[in-house]
Image (cartoon, rainbow, N blue to C red):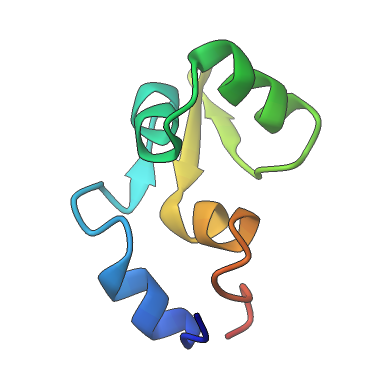
Length: 72
């Protein structure tokens, strides 16, 4: 599937917020939270800790899934 970054962002994961918590990210990917934390800690998916909790921008999930380029 070749989508521009803008198209991928508006079509995929549309039922999720623009910035997700760990539970939402894991639900979107269909993985357990243990795997989600591992992906964040090893840098496979980029996220930020805010107040001790991870916040993951949706665009970083799309990049991880290789659906779009962050620059696209």
